[in-house]
Length: 268
Figure (cartoon, rainbow, N blue to C red):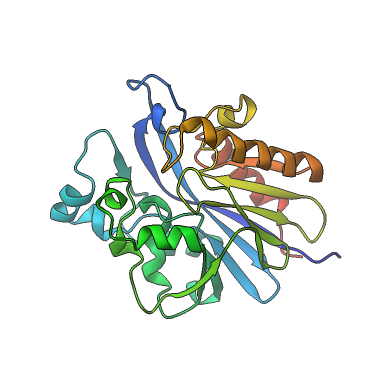
């Protein structure tokens, strides 16, 4: 068996109702989607690695905080149940929270970094240096771009900062795909039994971003047209290795991946 990931468990941590134009630049604003909020659990040598953490539930369930952080009716976060989504998803997968030995965040948007509170003072958290610097910069635009400092400004977090592509666990490589945010990273996952996946996360929200090389609708510091280059790079990596490229918020692909994983990825 080659060096790599033994098991993949795709998780669903909620949904978000939003204009399609957030995912595809130039899409009609009135066209709306209900997109899944994803995370990925990887069984690696040494333990479980979690990619992304979902929402900070306190900012959604508390009425005053919801008005403060999610006041726009154009964007509506939806939680899947009454408890903590990450805890419930891990319980359904039969994985204890204490079994997670490391976390990596694709970026610091609220639907990806809100669950970091579960890991402060507990495990290393992988992030791109440019992403964390932007998130902690104190610029007013940061929160307007849905990066909430309250989610991650915790001195107990053991940040492991990267400057570009880096292997963060055996068989898991973080690939810098900046554009959506200043330090967005996607992940290439090599399976121990052969094959693998490229998880784009928000470098490409939907299948049509990938297949038609369409710019994403939300970017920071770059022209939307520049967000196509990371998509091209991920497509090249996937084609070269024969891996499937998984878009970050596709409402068709993500449920299919979760269903197929139950049959395909068994403990080796």
